[in-house]
Image (tube, rainbow, N blue to C red; front, side, top):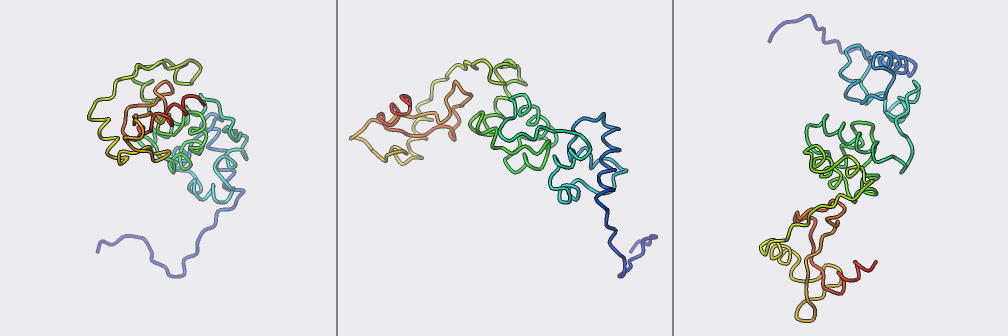
Length: 219
């Protein structure tokens, strides 16, 4: 084995970083960063940190609380994030991961906003990701992204094969009431409406009988 200067001591003690040292480390980094919110990954890349962000979050309660200790607010309001705050956070997490984030990732990266506000605003985190991707491709405007004006997507017709795949997956019955032909006529329904950003992806389609589908529209 290669020799080095490291000493493998069985009696080596664990160096415990105090809460005061953690806060001071955050304060120093905040000044370097311009006194604005920064992510766990950005902090962990700093070579002069006293410990990693996970240890700080566990000791101080959360990353948001840790930043608040040095005077940085990250939008701690519950269920009151603005659409811009949510999309800015989603883009930040997406860039950090290099891929569309899933529900667990949202509470680990960025400003640690959970996926719940995205579900409340856009139906699901996946739908929010699809809208952000469309915005980045230039397919919709910023007001459409943030929901201040309708997206007015052109509704592409479902192919016969896609309809067949949905019916077959749902065992040729209404997923709400269980009714089957010939008693009822079956229709393929978008779970999230196209006008709200829904797609023709198989996961956004389901089989409904005509009465259940009509009842959904009447609500």
